[in-house]
Length: 263
Image 1 (cartoon, rainbow, N blue to C red):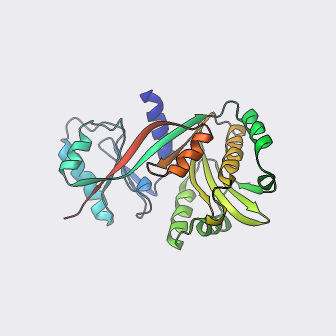
Image 2 (cartoon, rainbow, N blue to C red):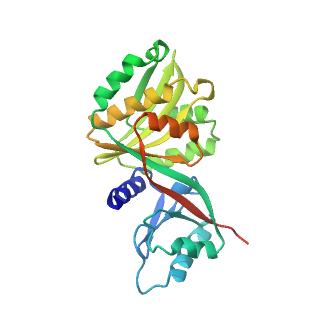
Image 3 (cartoon, rainbow, N blue to C red):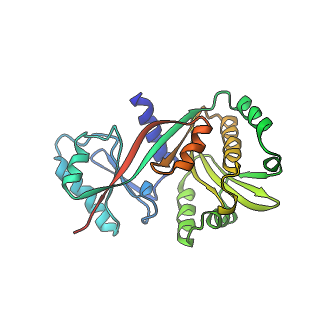
């Protein structure tokens, strides 16, 4: 089971990259101008050099973030190496933030599942249309920013991250009478698809739009060779957790961040 977890975690580093990354004694230091902990944290999947103490390894990572003028953040998983890292970070005044569930499902049978879903969905949903672009565009970023109520800086940061990401992608938008109402990004990594930025505009939530959108995205992924899909959801985001459970996603592991509290 741990091999599956680690494969998904490694895939997530590829499907949502950093603008800059460097290896520091087996760990991957990711830097992206401060946008999102996902792209601005130390990935600790591999063990450190046996000739380096854990304290020195942590200090080397801290120096990279201090130099960049960014908060020092470590991403922690059940398979973080070495296993005592979380406790050591606690002792160094690192606080736990953003506990997150990683969920996954197989895409086997998605076509039949979608047909059954179509038979049960409301007439209102059947009137929605959608588009999938395989290249990001300023228009898509503007739509996502408006739906997510993001500041301009967030949309700009996502555009930069996606520009350095060479993996196949789907930028999906759902429309109601030509008005964008929801959007999502899917990124393919061999037989896995990572799902990111599932957004439904505030006036359109709890109407089944996100479920319809994700079914279409999963069908797209399968048609492009994916066998599995995964996503991350905040520990306390009960509405999203319920949505994903209804789509067949199951939790495979959890991660959290350790963030240095500056004195």
